[in-house]
Length: 285
Image 1: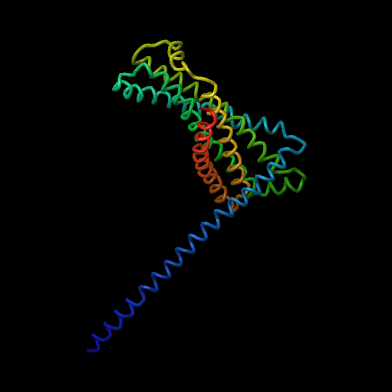
Image 2: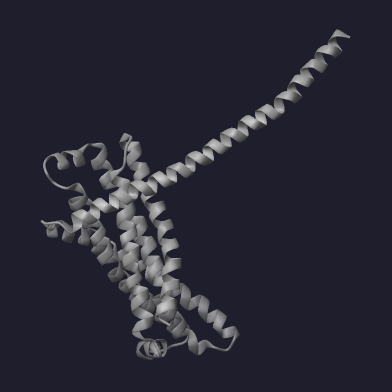
């Protein structure tokens, strides 16, 4: 009898504790969501303050021309081989996959136009942006993050040098200028390798391939898609510089800054591409 009574009391206590435990876990989940939302708003607020300081430093004398050229070389010319290889790979894939699809519909003659239009309008710009985001974003985040945790940025500010101007502004401007140029390289490499993959299946001269592909193409098709990568460069440079200059926590914080710089800039780049494509279609029909 005593054993049955004790089992009944234990069972009752367990059942009564279940709603309390569920309520406690639900409250913890709500607090976690609130903390996440607040951290997102805090990030955007701090990022806005950072952009304001960078913008103020950009248009104030003296101008850091030598540092800008150094960053342009680091971001532009050193990214060129990787971007060219990526563009060439996209051109080969488009040439192989598109030929098979067009053959089913008897439209093989449209292959040059499909390859060139696809590269110019979307594939070239977005691939270039993501490649540069991975290479340059991680580099800027790690470089500025290491300077932050070793207090080099604080020493620079104490010595009278504006770190937002010397470190962030030059990198952002270099990204803004380099991205359209790298996009042209990716487009050229993609078109060349697209022609090569096509001519291996069915021989066609490069001149005829370009004439067929560029037939009907205007600057309204080419310029907006290429110049939108300047916005990609602005996003990559600003986000990566902010993540690096707000780094904390020693070497572990430097790693987090490099990783978050790549992830956040790539995400913003994709979201910005959606809006930019819509604007291009709206104003450049």
